[in-house]
Structure formats: C-alpha cells, structure tokens
Amino acid sequence: MTTAPALDLTADPLTLTRALCDIPSVSGDEAAIADAIEAALRGLPHLEVLRDGDAVVARTHTGRASRVVVAGHIDTVPLAGNLPTRLEGTGDDAVLWGRGTVDMKGGVAVALALAASLTAPTRDVTWVFYDHEEVEASLNGLGRIARTHPEWLACDFAVLGEPTAAGLEGGCNGTLRAEVRVPGVAAHSARSWMGSTRSTARARCSGGSRSTSRPRSRWTASCTARGSTRSASVAGSRGTSCRTSAWSR
Image 1: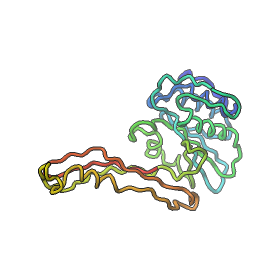
Image 2: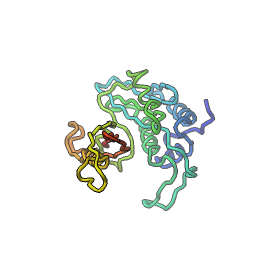
Image 3: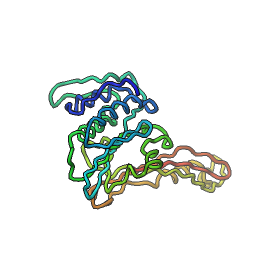
Image 4: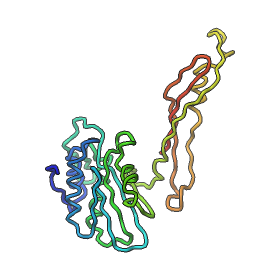
C-alpha cells in the first residue's frame, strides 16, 4: 500500500475532484490513487470492494432485478506542470485547472460520491475505477477485468463517465485500420493526367467517411454518431498502397 492521502467521499464534488487530481496518476503510476479509492470504499458497509492490479471495483448486493455498471478511468496523460490544481474565479465563473480535471477525475469524483451515498439504489450498481486508459489497449484495466473477471462486469446497462458536457452520447464505436491497395498507372509528370498516382489513391482513401445520425438503442435514440477518416501514410511504385485509420466517436 502507498501513503496516498485519505479521500473524504462526503466532501463537495469540487473538493473531492481536487483531491483526486492532486494525486498524480499518469498511466502506469496509478497505485497511489487506486489505494486511496480502495481505502475510502472499504469503509462503506453497503459495498463489496474488489481489486485487480490498480483497478478498484465496488458493488451493491441488494437483490434488485437489474444491475448498472458505472465506470471511469483513474489515470491521466503525462503531466505538463499543471499540478497541483488551481481554482480561478468565483461563484458560477470559477474554473478548476489541472491535469485530470476534465478527463476524467471530475467524473470519478461524482461516481465516488454516489457510491458512498446511494446505500439503497433502485437497481444494483457496480462502480468500476480502472487503470491504463490513456495508453495502448493491451494494458487497459477495463479490458483486463473483462478477461480475468468477466462476472464483475455483468450488468443490464452501463455508463462510462467520460466528459460529454453533461450530454448523453452513444460512446466510442471503435477504430478501424485498413490497408487499401489501389493499382497505379505510371505517367510522366508532364502528362500526369494519363496516369494514376499515389495522390489519387490518397484522395480515394480519405473520402469515404461521413457523419451519420441514427438511433443506437431505445436508451440512446437521440444520440449522434460522428465519424472521421485520416490518411496516415501513402507509398507506392507500380502499385499504390494507402494506409488509413478511421474512427467514430
């Protein structure tokens, strides 16, 4: 166990957010914040608390007919001289600055406060606070739990507390990486229109994604899925190869 400061889950959300943010937790260095979260949750009699690496899971067992998972990551991207946090302005104009304030320790603070206060929820709840979100997928703590303890994530509905300006979004729809090969036709630069070049292939590769709006489920019928495509590299000789990465969020 580390010597992380104690967290007061009954504090106001701003104070709790600052306390979480002021515990540095760059991906791969989440032990201190995971220890603090675990210690705070283990003192609550209505929760079963589980630990896997630097991921902490807490869940109710009230016997409700359905279960909701509320998850959020506790790691951040590298620091840039932006800790400890600072508060600028007052009242409704106050802004909290610092690494993790948006992505996503504000959401973690809300989830922890709710985990502490909802002693008899209308549905059983599993609270998941996981590590290694901001690095390669193979290290992701939520994926690790899904592989090693899938029963911890069993539920009827799930919410991930990423920042969305208080809106409900359908979430990230995943990534697509493809290698597209387009036959080329050699031509002299003075008669370039007679050939098919790698620039032509780039245009073909990068023009295939557009925004869509469609119902995702009865829970998120008003959500919009947005897509974009980025051409990462183009190379070719007799034939042309275009690698492209497409994603939607």
